[in-house]
Length: 207
Ligand code: SAH
Image (cartoon, rainbow, N blue to C red; front, top):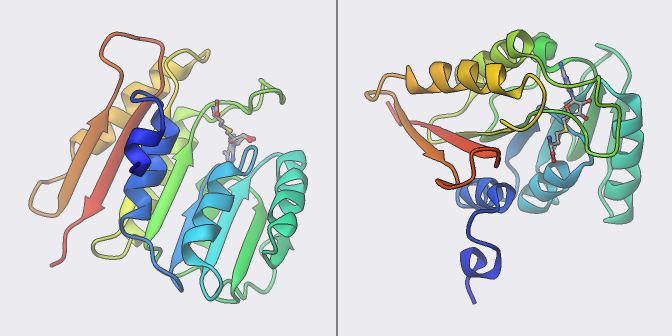
């Protein structure tokens, strides 16, 4: 059974992962802009391990602590960066950064092969700490700048979350405005469930 057949058709997170798995290889650099429960961080690490690195951001310390345990239980080397310290992001492993993704260009990370952002709030966590349109746009703009050629950005948005609609409008307008000479853009949604999560994937074309 193929990966796509093994999951429910309209579940969006497996689609986002599947579309990044197509381009990620061992040794690559990948970025997770919203660590949350750490599932995407773990997924990215599984694609780039053991010689690659994943750099992942969250404003909630609890999300990073939980994800560190998850990654360590999977045998990943994990580095917790509390501030803009010395960097060393090329060191193979998972680098967890306690900062807003709006600041991610201030870290000298390099050009990632893949970037993922799973927006909204952490289920079972503090719902007041949710992604916001302005910082999301700043972070995604950074991703579009830094992505390698033929690299992909995947964004999952949640119309059902409070304030989610405004954020989705902002993301949709950013990505639908990408020039087709430089970008391929894909948008996936469940056509008959307006509250279901949405996916955008943008791929930077080779020059
Ligand atoms: N909505 C998804 C999970 C999203 S988790 C689901 O339902 O599965 C989103 C994560 O983004 C949360 O852990 C939250 O702390 C984090 N976050 C919110 N604003 C952020 C910011 N500016 N920078 C980095 N992380 C942020």
